[in-house]
Image (cartoon, rainbow, N blue to C red; front, side, top):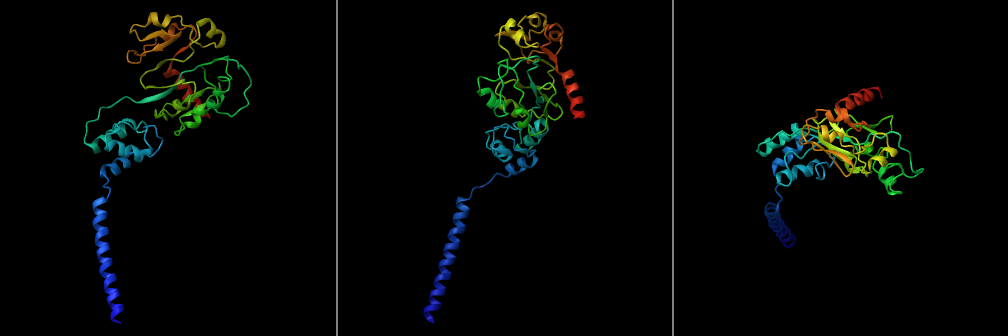
Amino acid sequence: MDLILGAAITLSILGMVFGIGLAIASDKFAVKVDPRIDSINEVLPGANCGACSQPGCGGFAQAVVEGKAPVSGCTVGQAAVAKLVANIMGVKFENRERVISVVMCHARGVKDKFTYDGIQDCRAAHIVGGGFLGCDYGCLGLGTCVEACKFEAMYMGKDGLPQVIKERCTGCGKCAAVCPRKIISIVPESKMVHVRCKSLDKGAVAKKICQDSCIACKQCEKICPYDAIHVQNNLAVIDYNKCTSCGKCVEVCPNHTIINFAREQSLAAHTAALV
C-alpha cells in the first residue's frame, strides 16, 4: 500500500514538474502574432486572388506588417482598402488613381493560318506553331483571360474578342498575366485613348493581315501637342505620363487603330446589360 501511495505521489510530482516545464517552454518559444495582421486581414476584400504577389489576403497582411509589401498593395480593394490599412499601420496614405484592364487588340478580318483543334486555351494554342491566328500579335480569342477573372469583369464579345466591364474591373492583372500575347495592359482609369494593336510588322504587311492594324504612318505622332505618342518598332506607343486623352491622335488615325476608350466602354456596358 505504501509502495502504491509513494508511486502515485512521485507521478504527481513529476507531472507538476513537467507541466511547469512545458508552460515555461510554451511561453519562451511561443510565436507572437502581431495583432495588426488580424486587423488588416479584417479590412481586406477576402478575394485571395494573389494579385498582390502574396499567398492570399492573410499573406498580404503579414507582408505589410513585416514591411515587405506596401499598404496600397491590394489592387482589388484599391484606394478605399489602402487607406484603412495605412490607418492600422499608422502611416500616411497617398491616394493613387484607380487602374483597369484594357485589351489592346481591335482585330477585324484576320484569317487563321491553320485549323486548331487542341485545348481551348490561349496559352496552349500559342505553343502550337506560334498560334493559329494570321496575326502573330493579335488576340487568339479563346477566353483564357475571361476564365482567369475572379470578378466577372470580362466576357467574350460577339466579335470574338474579350471585353472589359470597367465598373467591375479591379485592375488585379490576372487577365494580363495569363495572356500569352501580352495584349492586355493595366492602365490608369482616367486615360481614355489607347492604341488597340500590338503588331510589330511593317505597315504594308500589317495592313494585309488586319484591317485595324497600326501602319506606322506617324500621323498621330505629328499631331500630338504633348509629345505623348511615338512610333517604335512599327507600332504607335502612348506615354501615359504625358497623354491628356485629348483625342487628336484618334481623329487622324487612318485605320481607326487608336480609339477613345470612353466610347468603347459605353458600348461594352450596354452590351453586357443585354447578356
